[in-house]
Image 1 (cartoon, rainbow, N blue to C red):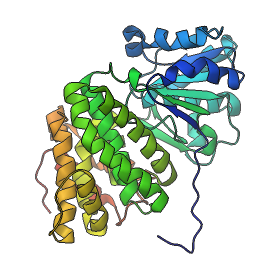
Image 2 (cartoon, helix red, strand yellow; image 1 turned 90 degrees about the vertical axis):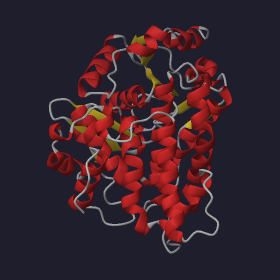
Image 3 (spheres, rainbow, N blue to C red; image 1 turned 120 degrees about the vertical axis):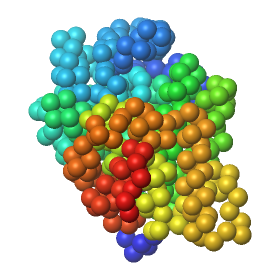
Image 4 (cartoon, rainbow, N blue to C red; image 1 turned 30 degrees about the vertical axis):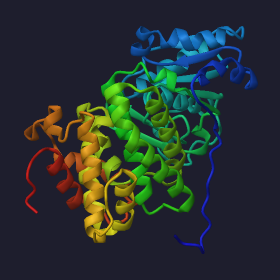
Amino acid sequence: MAWNAVHPFECPTRIFYGLGASAELGTRLAELNIARPLLVTDQGLQRAGAVDRVAEHAHAGGLDVCVYDATSENPTTTNLDEICELYRSERCDGLIGLGGGSSMDAAKAASALLENGGSIWDYRGKDLVPQPGPPVICIPTTCGTGAEVTFVVVVTDPAEHFKVVCAARNLAARVALVDPELVVSAPAHVIAATGADALAHATESYVNLGSDPLLDALNIRAITMIGRSLRPAVAEKQTEAIAELSLASTMTGVAFNMNANAIVHAASTPVTAHYGVPHGVANAIFLADGLDILRPACEEKLADIAAALGAEVSGLTSTEAAQQGVEAIRALCQDVGLPATLRDWGLEPAEVDIPKLVEDAMKSRNITTNPRPIGPPELEQLYTTVLGQVTST
């Protein structure tokens, strides 16, 4: 760490976590002077009854809730247009993002557009959202994205097959209600994928160039929590394990929000945009092989990760211990039923345009944060590996 530099840290989102935290929705809406919130969610949660359950907490406080339930699996520019139109027509005065990262990002991004106008493309990059929008309360129903506490939104432009990434303090939710009771009913495969996403956030934030002791403390504890909780959360739907995953996701969300991710997110995001691979699944597929490419530049930290995941590293060389970290991650993802390669997920190598994926990955803000230089050759190697092919290098 560079002690001769000033390191910023902030988390403007107020966090309330624990079983039943979502029951405080009415109180938190009142504190923000929101009388008619627009609840942004998706059809799956609507069918599962989660929307009615959460809305009832607002109704108990005498508030009327308008619902938008058409958020896509990866939120789109069309979703944002529809949310903004409904918000204005219903004269809403705040937003609730209920769901995974998609609904929470959609609520945060729509808030920015409602205040600042224009297109999400106008705010692509860092610190380009000039004014905060209407207040947002985020309520996650998965245990992986950390979107409830990040300054970041990711929105897909279907016309361009491109994920627009915006990072700005004025995108932060005002309040996060982290309630594991809303995650318990999620399908096991969703818990597996979102838990792997949280693991990717924690490990990439831990090894990247922006790490520091404060962020490291959050990340390594989150890795430990994910390592002991993900398997029982998926296999047995243990409430305590799911609660621990939920908090770990929020913890690493606070951390990676400050220093971004690395090669895994840079490479996986275009695959989601072009081929529809779910974000958490894509990160699980890329995670071990991506970190292996970084391994020569972060052996000590990968050894820490190995120990946090329960691997025995005493007596090993730094190189051996780092390799144990990579393999412990690979084993964890496979133990919870996540595919090892894109071919296992259903993509055939001949269908994939690797040069286009490399081109899009090189535009990611997560390229410059890697602990070793990453360019087209490294990305091509990674794509070839995760497609289930044998690299020529």
